[in-house]
Image (cartoon, rainbow, N blue to C red; front, side):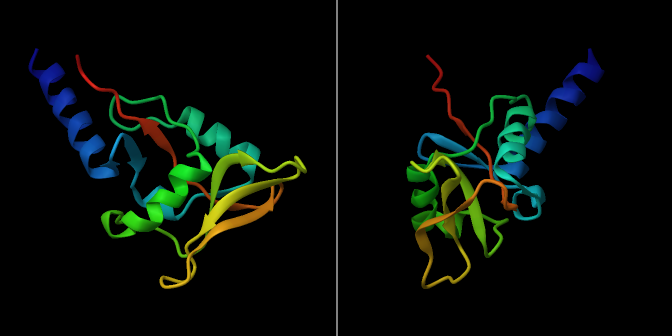
Length: 131
């Protein structure tokens, strides 16, 4: 029984130290969020397979969600000053919308790049409300 409690406490601490909740979205906010660079397909798989704490329902953020992070960037600890993928594929089906955090006072909210390029990955999950 003690081992189960210790394991539970470890998982909760991991989740709290590696995520940040803004509104109804829980954002990945560990060192991997500013060091993982993958192409679009691998980014989707990375999020799908991500486990933080007890959570395993991660995904790429929508373009709107990613843009909302611009106004909350001060709440994020681990952020690379470069392009992050969103889940929104452009009409040409070859490129994806994202946000480029390269310049603090000139963040490009409507950036896009080809799916085959490698860019930063930050996963999100919908915060479930307890009933």
